[in-house]
Image (cartoon, rainbow, N blue to C red; front, side, top):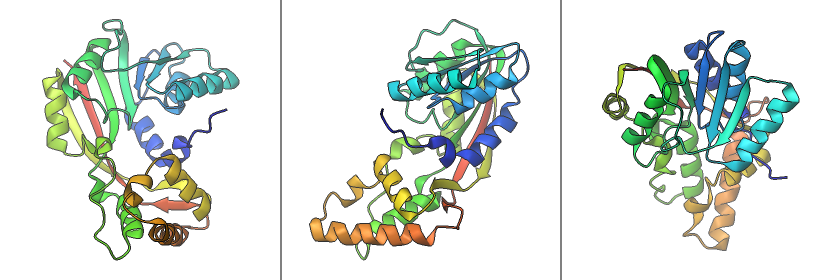
Length: 257
């Protein structure tokens, strides 16, 4: 069985923020974009007791795991599809609410993607999402880069794809161009979790491919020292209840015109 990083544990605090903002109603038909292993979809389905929730994600292992978890929890009004929300032929106007927990930042053509998502929503339906603020406003990003860099100049940053909607002006412009109105963007800051101890957190960073590029130009001895610094830094962030880092996101709400 493929082991999957526990995004739900990492993002548990943001999950609460998203649920509160989404306010899923009993009869809602919910579209969850970039659903991962489906926690946000299952939460929506539990609230939409006379409605339903569909989660879509590009990762087949995550979608398979989402189905397994839903079946194990006996949730009958939820379904999952491996699909690219940028181009998937959703039934027009089929959903009353769209939501996403850090699942909309990787579109190659954001305007086209949100236009496609908008077509799937009924006129006036809400879209509620959380997206990352800039990488230099993330404690985890700064600490990881500095630990691996040592006395060298820190690498420019982690994958920028995750931060494509970090500029509120850009995010609002994309949504407006895609046919959404009443765009509201609110700052939220919550800690994120990487594991019960430093060694587990280090393994999680490798699973997330957040280390390899930052040590790619080092020789074996330099790499070993960099990983020692990384482990020490992670240990310093162990609160006794796991390894946590501060982070910043935007809560973005809009309505389909």
